[in-house]
Length: 361
Image 1 (cartoon, helix red, strand yellow):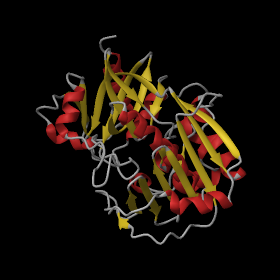
Image 2 (spheres, helix red, strand yellow):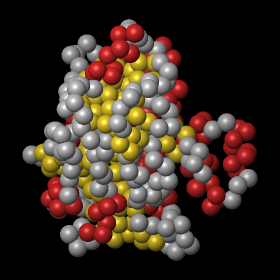
Image 3 (cartoon, helix red, strand yellow):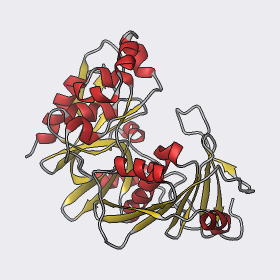
Image 4 (cartoon, one colour):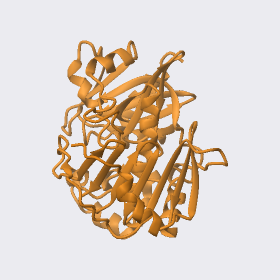
């Protein structure tokens, strides 16, 4: 639903009452980003989270203002965002203006207003800094998509300038596999979202500065991640059956520089291949096979990703950059694709992914 007026009519009084005097400069690849806020607590959290992506004095390509205040109450005719496949909760509602969109998070009360280069996060930002991080990253995702990329639900690693995109349906273990491969010396490109664009030299993959969110089972079986969990939690989770560990909703942010050392985060790389995880938690042996996506269109939903509510509409009633299966097939062309099926075996899969990545070097 599109209503008259401007989304800034809602945000302006709160912006005026809460001057954002703190500024954090960031750089995501070629994009300069400036975040303004009135909250020292939020500033400190964002500076820590984005420590590997310091900015400079360049004019910003993206500006985000985050205002710390109680959850704003806007009298708007919100529409409810449909629940995503596999999700149990409705998390967002939204309303469109001719010049932008307002999105309200139902669980936290945070409100995001954006359009025409104006991007505002308003509400309890410091207590929900992960949602502010996602908002900042989404502004970058939109920028890259508008430069000709398609969005993938995937993680990514790279070695010597060659990158691997790893996809799979929700819960397949993309992030866990990426970290197992990193333990063998590769760099990290992205967690959960990858943008892929075809340039003159071939496919280029772009990541976002989003730290991997891992469950207790992943932490317990990876020595690099030991520091993200307290000793008390380690004892408690170690007592649980392995099957229960993987289904826990409890998540940890694995800070790449803390766990693997500085300089291991790369936000873009040439794309050398695509891995699709279709395995299951069974006693079957893991299997790998090269596949042709034109003959296996059933695999496309494993990595296709809708741009969602945080992509600015191109106009009233327009969805923005909706992409079709044929768009993804045309983009990927003859990109090598490896399906990993059978039973879950992260060590064997990491070995297979590295061998796949290094082919043709």
